[in-house]
Amino acid sequence: MADKTYKLNADQDIPALGLGTWQSEPGQVQKAVAHALKSGYKLIDGAYCYGNEDEVGAGLAEAFASGIKREDIFVVSKVWATYNTRVELGLDKSLKSLGLDYVDLFLVHWPLLMNPEGNHDKFPKLPNGERDIIHSHSHIDTWKQMEALLSTGKTKAIGVSNYSKRYLEQLLPHATVIPAVNQIENHPALPQQEIVDLCKEKGIHIMAYSPLGSTGGPLFTAEPVVQIAEKHGVKPSTVLLSYHIPRGSTVLAKSISPERIDENKKLIELDAEDIKLLDDYSNKLTKEGKLQRFVYPPFGVDFGFPDKS
Image (cartoon, rainbow, N blue to C red; front, side, top):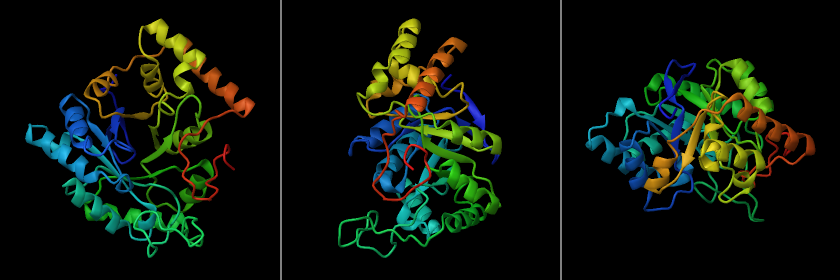
């Protein structure tokens, strides 16, 4: 299951499973990336904002030195919100850190602009402590810059991240290139079905981040998850990662532990009964207004997510 791939609208194959690097412990990322690639992972997901692309690059270099070919690995990066009017510069910074000539996929990390001339490279603030956001900026202008990157050879495909149905509906009429991917938080407690369905209709591939919710979070003890895990003789985390395969999505599993990185590869095939249990759980939470979103930075912007609007 972990070796499965999907075809993107940019005519690339994207693996069903990738290693996520957000909030990975400093000093441990190189080892995690190198181990993941040597043990069969084909996709590494990173971003300028994570502040660890130098380490990701060192892990890639270690893996390539061991005989793994660059063309066999799918590398993802993202332009940060302070670079959304300077996307090529953002990409150049990531490429330099990663030690690469190109990435396979480059995403708009969040659809807003934080002050590119503010008092911090990544998180500029106003005197009152709020994020320094340029509210007059349109995310459509950022996408036009993203489209221009394709002719540079510095990325093979472009996409978005954290785009709601509303934001996609604003973007798509103006897009010459349809995003290849929308990377969103996705798990049974936040199915975001309205986004998944729209993306499927438009040929946009879903990448799921935070598939386990939060560390030690409620999903690990959710009744259907535990029930399915016991039935298959696996851990709840395996069920939560495997949930994305029948949905046709790529899932990002984050760990720096070699044992867990290997464990996360052991995806299982959920049967129709399992899928129904998880869908019923999602529908119940939706109906009761109890969906749980674990990643929502304090931008003070309405991004159009129904649970946050």
